[in-house]
Amino acid sequence: MVAEGMELDQENVMTPRILVVGRSHAGKSTAARILSEYFSVQAGETSASIIDRYCDENGLDRERVCRNKEAYRLELFDYGNRARRENPACWVDDQLARGAQVVAGCRTDVEFAAARGLVDIAIAIDGPRARPNETDRLDLSRADLVLWNDFRTEYAFAEHLTQVVQDWWARPEVYMIGRYRAWKPDGSWDTEAMRANAEDELLFGRRLETLGLRAFCPINIHLPLDTFWPDHSEAARRIIGMGLAHIQRMQPKHFVALREGWDRDPPSQGSTLEYAAARQRHLLPLHEEDGFDTIEMYVEELGVTA
Image (cartoon, rainbow, N blue to C red; front, side, top):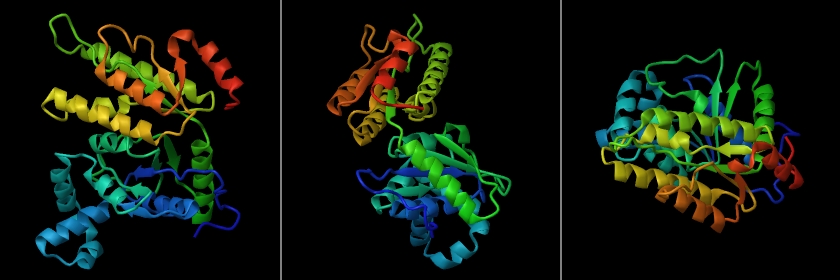
């Protein structure tokens, strides 16, 4: 239970969707339960979806599999990966469809990237009690928040976790729009330029966070997924859809950051669609070409503080 004095002020607050990831035994299930109690919403785990379907298809007793989860771990991981080949976020999708607002579990960068657009906040839990195994293949630095769980009591962990998440959720969000693919004169991908664009976007996002914003960087979706589907057009369509789905979850009067050169000729179909969706949501534009000092003054005039 969330301790007395740690309840959320529910007035005029939209409940966030939260994805909790972390290494095995770091405390991500505990974190998901704490946050679900704090926000008075349902929690779920992707492992529950995998176990349910695995047991149904193989005629196994669910309670027995759960009691012996370590023995089944690799088999369940392989089973989950087979379903992820078509839709990497299928198990997160399943938990959201069941009504969960806080979902624990993502094992790979591809799964995390595909699920990131479906949620508002992604939190990684790590700590000295974590016991990583061969199924832990996620780069935790991709999360919005990385929390080190070395607390002696669950109460102390809950107090810290809920305060950090609520402070982050209170920040206005800014969605980054840029150019993700770059081409050489011969028509092949310019991977070096794409890597540089990605690093620039992440750096710009971190600078915006110093102004009291929370940045959503679509490059964290693009990089792991751009080569996941063999058909590049199909990959682009799906990735754009993930970004648009996230924009639809954003609150009006939050921000869209337009990277320098985002609208250069020829126009990017993805960036054009993102900008149209941002305008429809009444997101406030921040133009990188205006310079960071100008952006900082504008954000401060709107009452946003770090």
